[in-house]
Image (tube, rainbow, N blue to C red; front, side, top):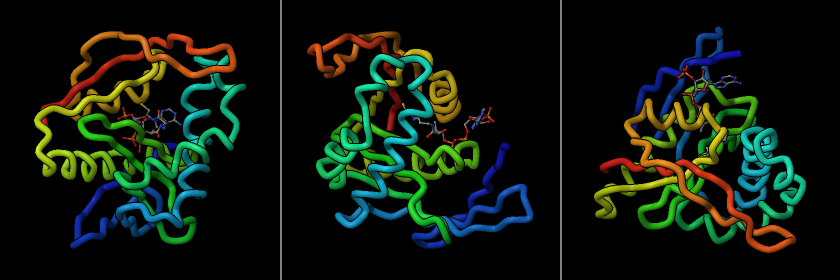
Length: 181
Ligand SMILES: CC(C)(COP(=O)(O)OP(=O)(O)OC[C@H]1O[C@@H](n2cnc3c(N)ncnc32)[C@H](O)[C@@H]1OP(=O)(O)O)[C@@H](O)C(=O)NCCC(=O)NCCS
């Protein structure tokens, strides 16, 4: 099901009207410590939805606890998207010039929420004085790559990300994308 959000900004709130007879308020705000568990859940489900088919051997080594362990250190530079009712359904986290994570709850992908959070995260990165941001996207995650290209990111080619596994570090091909901030 494809939802298309039309976003109207009003102070720190974004109101998204969907093609359904549905109207939801979306708030994008900095993450707080209390968001850790729900962010970890979105991260776990979003990561598996996007990567399990391309990386089944890695997916079996990525249980919910693996995401819960990573999240606390990400929260300092993290925005969450909250909708009325379900609460937090997406987040973006970055470190310096790297946009490290952008994940939407699988039942909310295609809603345009990704663009709302991406736009806000890019603004914060730009305001911090970064001229060019970068991110990596697992080769095979065509939907995410197309999404970033649509939002002005440029594909700089394939490189290897060293994934930590039980057998040590294993290279995973990723696309590197950059964007002038
Ligand atoms: C990539 C992501 C952040 C984009 O956010 P989003 O809110 O879904 O963005 P959009 O609504 O603009 O949708 C992006 C595209 O995916 C398509 N899409 C979304 N959900 C889909 C689905 N279930 N099946 C097929 N296509 C889908 C949309 O149609 C859209 O394509 P279009 O622009 O040609 O219409 C989000 O889909 C996501 O979290 N994906 C899983 C995690 C991931 O891959 N993160 C990035 C890691 S690098």
